[in-house]
Length: 107
Image (cartoon, rainbow, N blue to C red; front, top):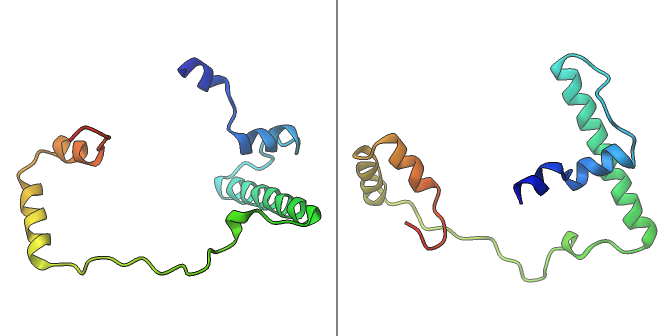
């Protein structure tokens, strides 16, 4: 799978390179390259929007479902935060990093 993945271009970059004939940056400084790429991406998004507008129907993921409510979170508790920090202080840095990479079925 790794070999197959390495030769495949991500979809958006493939569209930029093939359909829009964008193969290289024409600026040299990092700030100007960022601006050039941002304008290219803006052009791609406008092109995409115009394609949907011409077809007469926007994709359904652009519409907000009815009855959508804001997400609610637990109020922070000083005791819970203190316990979390206490546990974290006793761990080595690599153990802290391991906790960030939780996978299904593993702890």
